[in-house]
Length: 352
Ligand SMILES: *[C@@H]1O[C@H](CO)[C@@H](O)[C@H](O)[C@H]1NC(C)=O
Ligand SMILES: *[C@@H]1O[C@H](CO)[C@@H](O)[C@H](O)[C@H]1NC(C)=O
Ligand SMILES: *[C@@H]1O[C@H](CO)[C@@H](O)[C@H](O)[C@H]1NC(C)=O
Ligand SMILES: *[C@@H]1O[C@H](CO)[C@@H](O)[C@H](O)[C@H]1NC(C)=O
Ligand SMILES: *[C@@H]1O[C@H](CO)[C@@H](O)[C@H](O)[C@H]1NC(C)=O
Ligand SMILES: *[C@@H]1O[C@H](CO)[C@@H](O)[C@H](O)[C@H]1NC(C)=O
Image (cartoon, rainbow, N blue to C red; front, side, top):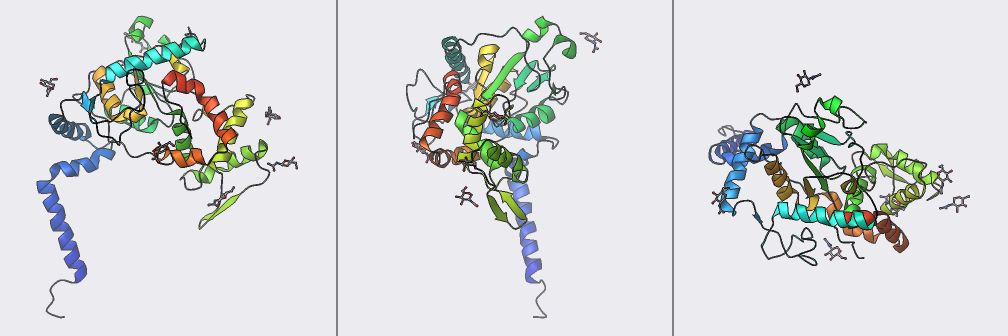
């Protein structure tokens, strides 16, 4: 083997280098796709925008999006599409947003929730003076992604989450009421129970990276009498509390009945916000790519930025199995708890 000039390891290394060089030279765009996640990387905006352009050239601009057949009545709830199907329809995001507002207006009226004269709560708002928008974050509705995107990419000077709690007021922002009226106000929502399932898998379930801190849920479950003992799941790095979705759901219901303990914003109802204040655009998580683009157009920056690609969400994948694991009475109570959100946000109540 003395005549062999390169060991198998070196050969492999050379192969990898050659392949990478090839990719860099001939597939520049592909390399750029990889950078999508690195929101802070310089040049990020440009490369994604370029990509977007070439994609748009292939599509008939932005308004026609390949989404599919509608579940129910197309004129009333146009956002309820299922993606796995065949028909191509025209998705006009502004029109859909208008319809969402109308759905909300009627539901607010029917449930007697009237507009609030109080200023908006600033805690969950991202405010940009540069582009004149207010973006309201909803936990488990790609809020982390939006936060990074708006803070790190779009407007590093934008404000939000920096004031902590408190009301939005003219002094803090050094703007008059009239000036603030001009800001485009946007909020995104998601199917209410899917949001809850997503929260469970990302925070509470023993496979979550945050499960090390799930003792607090175990304590609450014992305190509320859902069960009297801890159930552990053994992991190589130590035991971790094993909390089922059903137990977590019962805990949410317990806190609904028991207002003396404050509930995490992650599973609180959110639809009522549409009754209290006006919004210029309402997006849905289920049509995030299209609605994000629509928002960027609304604030006139769609030519410079594009929202990063979206990854498959656990809430979505685990939705059916999670809801099916629930005893019927708990599922019924849970749906009852979120019924107002279903009505105001225009989502179809799931049937199991
Ligand atoms: C796409 O939009 C641009 C301007 O917004 C327009 O000039 C062009 O004709 C449109 N293309 C199609 C296929 O609709
Ligand atoms: C508030 O805004 C005005 C102009 O709109 C500016 O002259 C003033 O310096 C600002 N005050 C603060 C505290 O930023
Ligand atoms: C927990 O213990 C109490 C008192 O021992 C008992 O009444 C209750 O039924 C138990 N709950 C469960 C879920 O086992
Ligand atoms: C978690 O606990 C439930 C019962 O509370 C049990 O059915 C399940 O097998 C446990 N899972 C793990 C991974 O320990
Ligand atoms: C509410 O929580 C408190 C404190 O944990 C408890 O004492 C009370 O019994 C609970 N009420 C209901 C209705 O569950
Ligand atoms: C989830 O359940 C619904 C109704 O039970 C069904 O129509 C749908 O196909 C299921 N989705 C998946 C991904 O299994």
